View 1 (cartoon, rainbow, N blue to C red):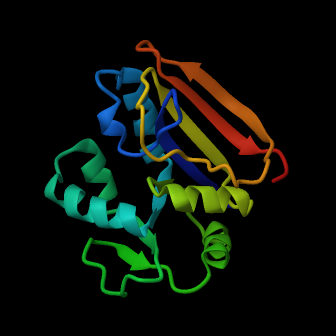
View 2: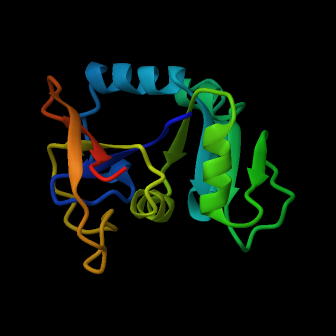
View 3: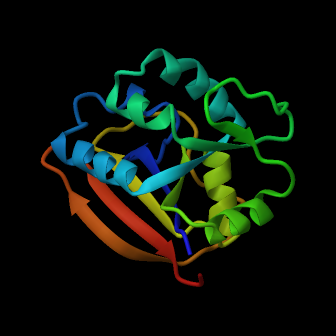
Length: 182
């Protein structure tokens, strides 16, 4: 069965929105190598509507960027009830129907890992639905001060198991978690 993963850049104060505003110069070679390994083991991406709209505008215009070379041609599924089925970004398909049922079916198909990219709402939903196999948080040594965080006060208590933890040369803490009950 395929694994569903998510990786989010975050600040020390837990902000995951617009990481470019707090990454500064902390994106180092180790993070780059980790991103390369992530891209190599992933052949399908799930995006929420907002991430899709932002990325569909940005990445096709940056095809020579290493991430652009990966994300543009990859199979992309978009979780949205308001977008129509005519998605302009190559290899993008709107998820028709229930997200949980779609992800369960997708996990059973042949292929490599499935990654939820950006899309904080989708990451949270799949984590609490028991469908997210691994959550990687890349904590930059910075305080964002404001912005959206991954978790909300109304989220249910959930036990996680630390799968892997590393600290990079520029002080990023990269921690990968899995749910204990999944």
